[in-house]
Every structure is written in structure tokens, then in C-alpha cells.
Image (cartoon, rainbow, N blue to C red; front, side, top):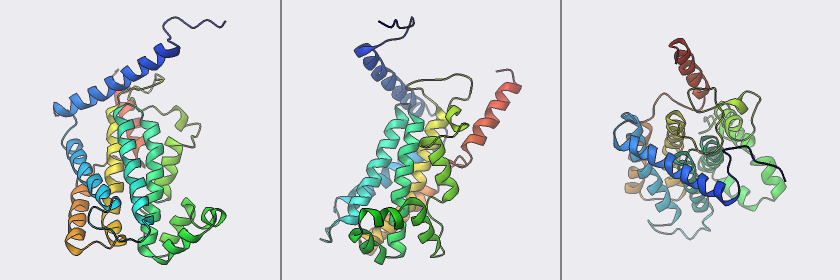
Length: 265
């Protein structure tokens, strides 16, 4: 029998302790929010994000009326809304790398919806295509190229997608060591509260949800008053964004750590 090092749990004790740590991470984040310690933009983003997710849920569930058109778009919207909600939940529980991986999936859905908005014929082609055809024509890189071919910038462009992959899915030797904690010296296994990590997840979700709102309204043929509501929510969402984004996150952490080191912290 292999002995466990002192202080390390196993079996059900470990599983139960993980759940307690997740709950503690979430409560700590909620308390910081309640005490106004997430700044000004953090609570604003969360409020507007809730508004945006509500609108996506209404579109996905045909709450404004059903088009009776197969629900292909509605189900993509459902998948995106669920992914966004799951990523936010993971962030509150202290799993930021994992949340970023889910955000990457949400970004792929956002780009696909953007393509269908720009070129409606592609929706029919995608729906009727075989698995091999979908892999070839509608993979993440191919979708970005199809969007760019229409003189539009993908919602999640190549630089952002690359970093999402490196931080959340396909790690590099450098990103494997990235910690969301500003100390940058310890290795945490399991839930661990990080305000920069939470801000990053909320910011990326705010950008994604805000970006897709009007176009999914058009795709699902909503009436003008509803389109106006979606456009207004988009403006409110994107207006809360901070300077922290996935493309500069590593540099931001590096700068903060250097300041800590300089101050002897």
C-alpha cells in the first residue's frame, strides 16, 4: 500500500473537501462583490452580463415567438448561453483555466453564428453537411477565414483564439506554469480565489455575449422593437468592458508580479 504524505486527503474525504473549497471560493467572491471590492466595472459587467444572458435564453427558447424553422440557430444560441453560464460558474468556484477552456468553445459558437449572419446560405450548407465536410469547411480556423473573406473581423479573431487555446486547452511550456495568483510562485491544485482570474472570465463573457446579441436577433427574425432591445443591451454590455482582456492577461500578471517583487512583497 502506498502511503499518503501527511496532510493530504483521499477518497470521499478529498471529494468532500474539494466541495467545501469550491463553496469557500464562491463565498469569498460574493463577499468582495457585496462589499464593493470588485471596483466599479466588475459589478456593472456582472449586471449587464445577466441581462445579456437572459436575452439569449429568451431567443433560444422561442420566448418571443417560434419561427418553426428547425431551431438550428436557437440551439446554437442555447449552447452559447449554457457555455457562458458554465464558464461563469467555474470562475466563481475558483477554476479559471477551465473557465477559459469553456469560453473558447463559446467563442467558436459566436464566430459560427456571425458567419451565418453574414452569409445565410452557409447555415443551410452547414446543416446539410457531413461530419467530414463540417470539419473541413466549418472548423474554427475555416470559419474565421470565411468571416474575414466578407471583410469582417471575427468576434474571436486568431490572436484571441490562440491565447484561449494556450491558457485553457492546448497548453504551451509557458502557459502550463501560468498562475492566476499574483504571487506567481506557488502551485495551487483545486479551487483558489483569484480576482484577476474572475475579472478576466467576466470580461471575456461580457465581450462575447455583447457581440452576438444583435446578430442572433436578426438570425431569428425578431421584430424591430426586440432588435432595438438587443442593440441597447449590446451597447450597455460593451460599454462596461475594462482594459483587461485575454490577449493582454499574461502581460498584466507579469507587470503586477514585477511590482510586487520590487516592493519586496
